[in-house]
Length: 103
Image (cartoon, rainbow, N blue to C red; front, side, top):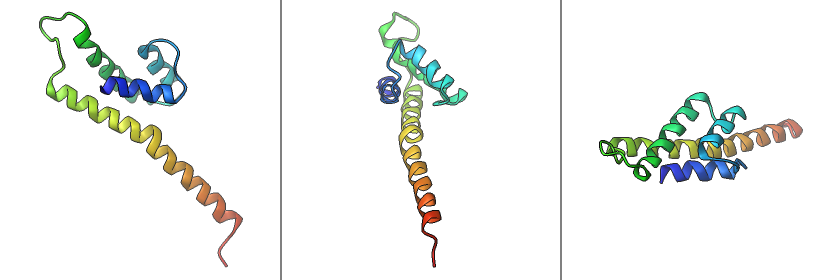
């Protein structure tokens, strides 16, 4: 589910073409993600793929890997949406303060 969350967040930012792999790389190129975030996103993507591929030794992610994937998805959501909205509100408030200084 964390991989699906990453996928949905990138789509919300109009990165809809190609594979999730390609869209993570595109998000990095567009500075939507930092290099570290892209690396972690790829790790989450690979973990999401694991149950779909035959691997006798590691067919599923570990509970710790799953926890880290969920933590990344939550952090990415905060970064892409919550923090961005706060910054936008802060910029707007600063601009309003300049237009109407206190008396």
